Length: 256
Image 1 (tube, rainbow, N blue to C red):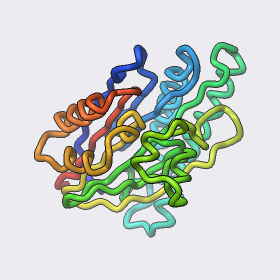
Image 2: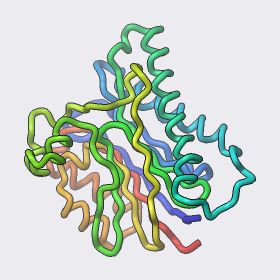
Image 3: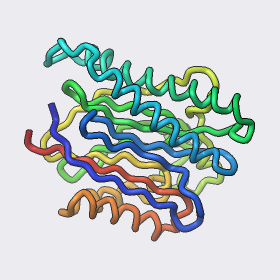
Image 4: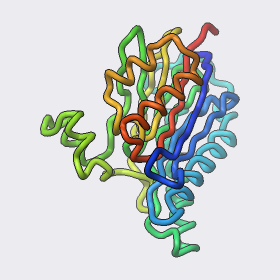
């Protein structure tokens, strides 16, 4: 099982008064999560915070599930255990959002993206909905582990837009999948291979939407503490205009 150290930092950015991002950092559960809220007034903040709280509570309450099963598991079993826990947690969060909107009409239309990493029994599992991202840095190279559920993300994958074009496109904030209180969301689940020395980044699009990959790669690869790396990433997003809330969670795989 991977041993992780971590640091998290969140900033409202330079153009927003409120911070509608939320995060979870629970080493005891092996759970790390970033959520980026959307909606008028304070509804986005409510959606992100509620999603994080529901997912955290569900993972906490199911931590004894299959406790008698031992590693190593094959890939598909890892996916079915912790992957299903995360998928169920995301879907429960979606239903809680629906209930909250039903009870309070001022919250109607709220939604949130979410990206989570769970390290419980072996290889970590990533779950995500929306355009919050997870990256892995290994030996000088940064690789995006998630695919954006967004209009521009689909255009990039189709070869119609470049990454730089996507960062400037007027529809860059249009997500095609989110926790929004509707039907159960389609949650992407992936098992992640990790090695000692790897670093992981979970972030809202306030970072990835304005800072290019090569810049992220250089900051994460610098010989700096996780806390200093988080601050450097926040600074880079604000130097690029800071148009949105910015949340970054940095993790490092240490010697067990």
